[in-house]
Image (cartoon, rainbow, N blue to C red; front, side, top):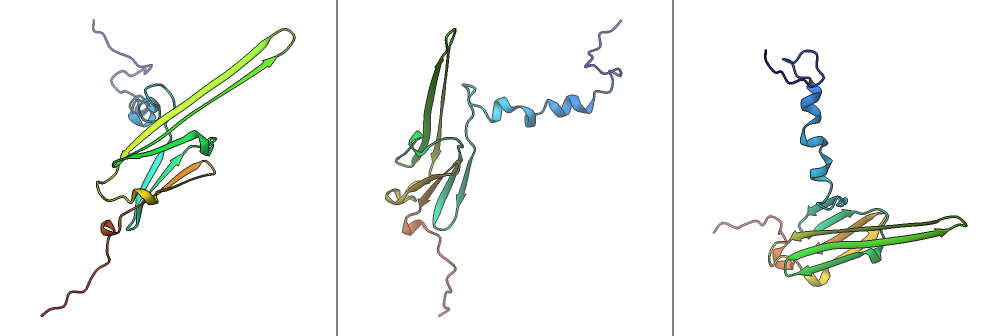
Length: 149
């Protein structure tokens, strides 16, 4: 007699495609979209062009006052903490609901490239946008024609 592991498949020698497909990281939201405290971490897009770095943080439902953005040397930190509380009293019961949401994202910017005095941030329609301009000497210059002597 031998012991055969079954996954609900009537043919144990042929594991189903679904067993492999659903066990992959693609469906493991715990590792990629949640922090260690089981709260969601907003998605971030970072773009670079010749003039600046553009950081976009998807944070719907928040307000400007909920964000804290700091630049310490070449380390950019975007954080937020938000809490709400609601109490409803009726004749026979009291309902109290509260929530607390927070996140911190930290990014290492290239050394001596960012013009820290000109960084601008806006928050509109659930998207926090940071425009981080480069110093003039760090900006990419266009092609230059070199004369032959």
